Length: 212
Image (cartoon, rainbow, N blue to C red; front, top):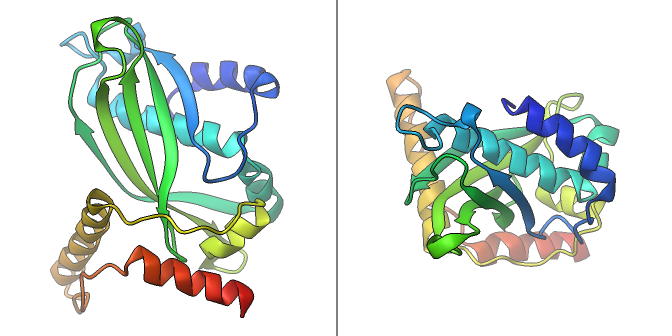
C-alpha cells in the first residue's frame, strides 16, 4: 500500500461510511489525481493504478464483514494475478471514482473487477481504465488457501452464481498460461491443461457441497 496519506484519512472517515450489504456488493471510492500521483506526462502514472486498486480493495474489505473475519481468523489476503487496461488518461487534478466488485469466484479464489471512471465534465461516466485481480485468502496456521464457500458463509454472503464473462475467462486462462510458461522455464513439468472450469459447474458444485 503506497497511499499512506489517503489511507490514514480513510480510516478516520470509515466509521461514518455506509456499510456494504455483503462481499458481492460494489465498493465505490471517490478520488482525485494529486501531485504525488503524476508522471512527466502530467497524468496518473501507471504504477498508481495498481496502488489505487489496493486502496479500493481495502475499502471493499473494510465496509463488509470480510475485514473482521480476516482479522479474527488471521487470514492473509493475497493478490495472485493482476492486469490493467488503460483507455483514457487521468490528468492532474482530475476527479474520478474507483469501483471495485467481485465478478466471479471459484473455490480457490475470486476475481475482482476495478474500474476508474470520470465523474465530471464531458467525459463523465467514461471508463478511463479497467483492472482485474485474482485474489484469495491464505490461512498461514493451516498452510492452505481458504475455500471461497467458507469465506462467503463467514461473511454472511448468500451463495449465488456469477456468470463467467468472456474477458474474465480470458484473464484466468492468461494466468494459467503464464504459470505453465514459468513451470516449463524452471524445468518443472508443465501444467497439463489451460482450461478454466465453467462458472456454472464450479459454483453449482459449491452449492451442492453446501446442501449435501
